[in-house]
Image (cartoon, rainbow, N blue to C red; front, side, top):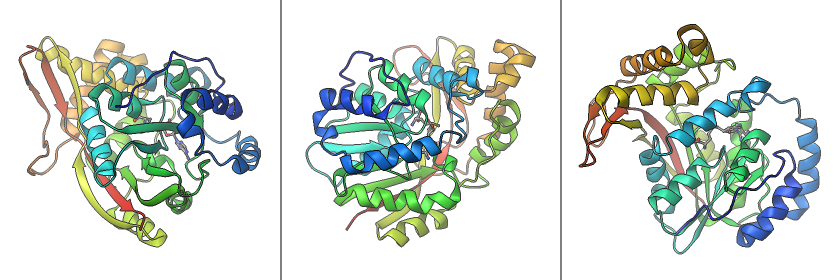
Length: 337
Ligand SMILES: C[S@@+](CC[C@H](N)C(=O)[O-])C[C@H]1O[C@@H](n2cnc3c(N)ncnc32)[C@H](O)[C@@H]1O
């Protein structure tokens, strides 16, 4: 069973070599998969990339990384059901302990969720392009590496799974094929690549355009996906693949229905860095505004096994109320022949 396993470690998010030294100690199996010959050229590229936009830098540097992390830490379970589904899909054909590279790993949420829900036999390697996120991951006990998804550090054929999820639209369209190629390269034969994002024109697309782009400091002008686009990347590289939609709802709990809704509103405000809302309405009203917007934007056609509209209900005997805002993600899952 995966565990977070280490005490918080202070390491600079920009210092890849120091991160690798710690990884050698805390996860020698994962460290052995690093291609040492790629490190030098990667570091040179990284220096050239320093000016690249980082939406997930700390809030004081103009990013929304600090409030994003706060959201995940206050409500680790908000997206746990969707994360579980992604990992189960990726590991369904594998055997034994499976090494999965989480390309957009942020502060390590996927690893943390796998640990909390006790998914057996997966070792999630958190990677991210934002030094702030990598530093936060280590500080909270998650080993992490500064890596760009389009320039992976692992040896060819060395890992069982590559996850590209919860932010794939941040990869510019011109680089998306390269990410698929790199993922194919690092996978062993039979390994799985899972690409997750949201359909263009979907409620999530509307949320980003009408709420996040207007009320966050970073804005949010990114192109989402069609199933055809995902299929093209998969086919071009040579994956045996399928595409589908999955339920990937948000949830929060509270001792009253109102508190459950309010807590989900807070999660959304923090996750998407809706600081302009907080400045004009104050935190409490901003949280209420966000949940009301979410309830009106996130609606889907009825489909078995999927949530269609927002609900607030008592789901178990804890007497807590759970607020669920439905969301559907589109995924492509490809296996390397
Ligand atoms: C929305 S966050 C997701 C974090 C985490 N997986 C979660 O679900 O909470 C997206 C992450 O992708 C990272 N990212 C964006 N473009 C990237 C790239 N080209 N390579 C690696 N990471 C990237 C960002 O820095 C950010 O931490």
